[in-house]
Length: 428
Length: 152
Image (cartoon, rainbow over all chains, first blue to last red; front, side):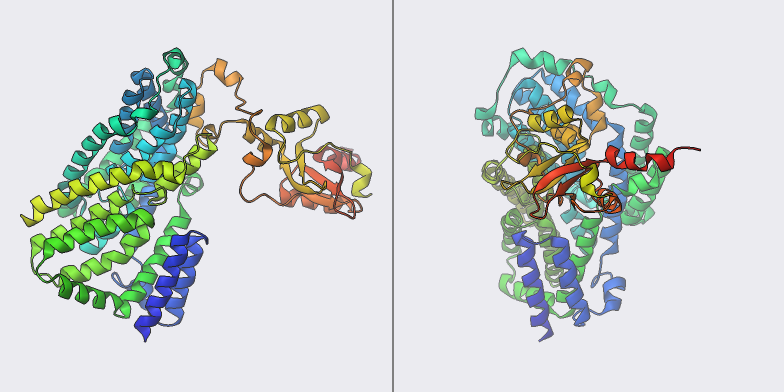
């Protein structure tokens, strides 16, 4: 009975989240409250159980990284790089697109995708206005590049943080297993854009001088601040990589990094805290409680057992289903709640499989599907939604279908490449 | 003293008017904002001058001071963006702030608190049918305080 109640609350809440008609934070808070009040998840578990409650590792990792990013973005580095790229390209469309995609894809494994998009899209709009060309192809390409690049590391995409915490995977695991395939997919994607956007490329040589008058050096007013921030950021990344030696959780590294960043930057704490997306953090907390309700009432274990019975020894079949299923579902729903819901199910499945290689294959197939699915439609990932909002307000409106027309082929291609990778690496 | 006693008649705009029209109305009548009315002349919202300015500046610059610094002086001098082509209604946020309005018989204290709550330097004054009859500006309201606030 309690399992049915938990599942009902969860499904109703998920429908509301997916419909985007109601504020998703309100939805998860009400659903989480209902789960706790009806004792479907005890209060003590909500706050103190690592696996059946709020995953504080993910919350504080996000919190720490939001502060770090909030300081880095004040340095003006991305405005400098964006304008530098525009000048280097001399207005040639494909060259401009590749440089902007490269900046986005290189930054997105380190900084979160939404922030990258918020930094790169305004520069893109200004550059395109100067060149008197449509900014839409460049913005869409940047979003797709950020979702691909973000898949490379533990901190690049929120689904990776959730998966890492559930599967006990560290930063190095992601570098070893995800980064190689992300590099391959990105290179293929860069080549694909040449054809994908060929009809949208405009070249106005007469307008190049308008771009050349932009003064990118003025974007960075405090070089010393920039250097200090980059040094702290590099130290944080190194500490993530040294997890197996230091045994310090990524959340702790991010929190310490955030503290040091605030200290060395000299920026007001209040100003830095304004950069924290509290709404996102509360959404994650509510989501974890909702999923914990499913776990505590045995719903997740039942689904896991059913999945094991169904797949039998066909582990590659299970990985294939996870990869394609996650990409398909992740394309139409926000991939964060999807990953939060599926992670304990995959964990339950993995616990019942006594084959390390196959277990690894399942986790990485899940991560690749959830991450690459974020490119499928205009609503699949937060970065996509933010980019469309910025583009519309900047006078370069991108419709749902305009984005999706490019998103779907890129998702299909990247998922097929990932499928081959999963097979060759874990099941051959 | 009542709101109507210090209100001055003002022209109004509709959501279909251009951003340029809103700017002209402010500068011509020396107003700190504009009142947007519906088809029946009832205030929909009051837009403070800084928000009208926001409509005129390319959105990409709003939250990116580093990007703004990269713009050369010649281009920065003509920063207004597409003001003729865009209607005021297009530039308003999805959730329009309730119009800062006061009845014509409202006291000055009422007008002052409406200004504070709405963070608006302009309060639309309406008649009993809620139609616009004028507006109280921040300067006019502060002017009524001047005799008391002057140093001895």
